[in-house]
Image 1: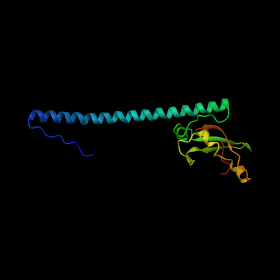
Image 2: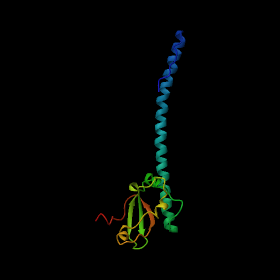
Image 3: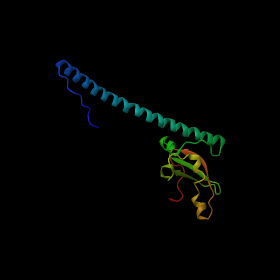
Image 4: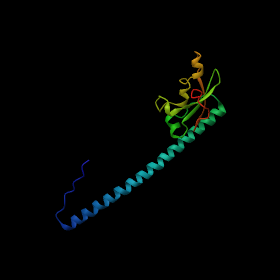
Length: 150
């Protein structure tokens, strides 16, 4: 954006007043930009904390009530709240594994409880079965080693 043109007044007093006002405006620009950056940092920290609390609340409801609890956090809320791992259990063989939410090819606005129908046990899939997974909880790190990596 091109700088705004302020016509220079003819009188000396008006020129000094214009220069003074332009100096104040430039100083306010710097101050307001710093305040904006500070407010944005605080806001992002508050959003991270809110997302973390939402994930913890969902985990507690899952533990207390069992089953997929709706509404659940979205994938991007879980990742933002530092809960990037989803612990699942195969409904057939009861094998547990962790799914890294950051590697899923789903829109980040997908709810975590909607992933239950999409996640399958890889061990049972090799045997020709495709039972759905049961969601257990969100966690900040992987708890179970990946059986395919061994």
